[in-house]
Image (cartoon, rainbow over all chains, first blue to last red; front, side):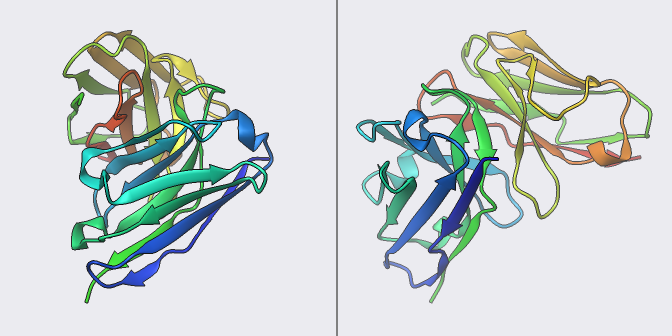
Length: 120
Length: 107
């Protein structure tokens, strides 16, 4: 069974930094691209970032470019997201998501999410 | 980026009735279109991928159709457990983008 467990969320002041981790199990982690999706309170889903299976290629939505860095350690079955220069509009539940394919396709399995609150 | 537009924002349907949800892309995404179901307090679940392939665990009353820029999710006979928010998403171009969602509520 695929399991994705996010950690590292919490309350942070505007301008601050936070590192999210996503621990994966139940599948061959190194074979799949991984994604980050967020959902602001009461709002819809927003794509944030992707890291390829080998960690070489990354993608970001425009609003987080230059502030968020996604990476992975395939030896630890873990994805990381370093979030810096955080703003109030980054407040959201952040989901770690496994890709359906070995390449990049639909978003197959989702973690339970971790809440990031940016507030003074 | 590709803009995904869903309609209607809210759909009021009686149990047993058919529901049709629409998703439009601002440019062609071929058949690289997925649908997700999200219930309150839960993470989303992949429902449809490749525009028409049903994901594991969903019954045959759910079907997807379309290609290019116009897509439809049809629920043939709504059951109580189907009342939720449904999102479409394109994965043809970067960045991946979601529609704003359609809430299916009990009439």
